[in-house]
Image (cartoon, rainbow, N blue to C red; front, side, top):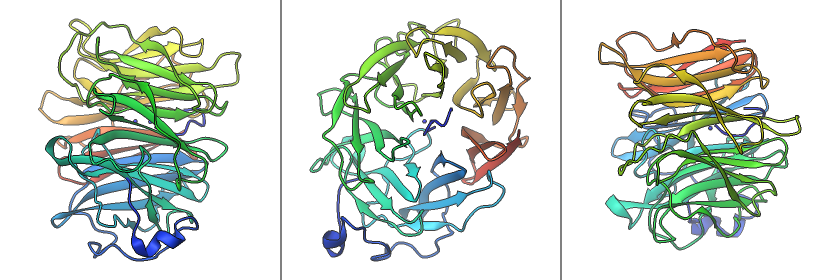
Length: 399
């Protein structure tokens, strides 16, 4: 579910801050549930975003009986990290988040936006999105509007957010405002203070798989998401900054006929500069005879895809990918090993996907790692995942 492509995956306002909203509330007040800004009982949600040389990390999890959000950053590829900052939830804490349905973050310079779903009137108590905004690089935060629009109490989730080179923030999410679960989009030209009216990209999609949203350097926007009939991955593209969208192609025509939700998205990177952008994707299918993770390439901007490489065995599942320069690519995934433990793996190509290294296990033996994320920053890749014991882990892959 990264993020801003350099070449590469909530609606309320405190009364006390209303008059200051357009300028930002700064550190107007601290959320009363925050006791120790460095503490989470466990990590239930993890998202990572790269802007320039800065890695932005957003964590969420319980503190006692309440959910809390934490932010930290690294400017040296993950070698060192800032102290954790408590992101106030202002009475609208995350609800229904888990790995694969994580709270999200995006950044453009000092402007940051975090987005998560909160409690509402939807199925199981699920509710609308809420947002938090920082204008000082994550030091202080104030509440922003629901990117999906005001007034809803129904479920909005599986959100992803990115910022383009002009500092415009773009977001996609799933909700049932069209009568069925579908994929929707909005953008903000003023750092998250206001959002455009929601657009429907696809009125009917899979109900609960994460989306991967990218803002490419050439101004194009890409969304990789799971369709419903069949439940293959689909690519939607905007060539005009989000004014209009079209479904470009099916990313891996497996024809998987499945009536449930696999809760598995994919990874996407884009390399621009040629007459047509080169897109690379990694997707999972449950289609008989092809179960597992597959790497695909499109050399015509996403119109056609070539199935290029199988990643891991049939147990490989949750995946992400990143690229350093368009030709050096890394893919990560989790897979259940023979010992019953879920392990984290990485594979790399330095020639645009023509040849690949052998898969390498990053997680320690006999530990439970899941839902890895990978970003390219500083002198190489940094991989993140969460452990069954409730902690998060990181591994740096030097270039």
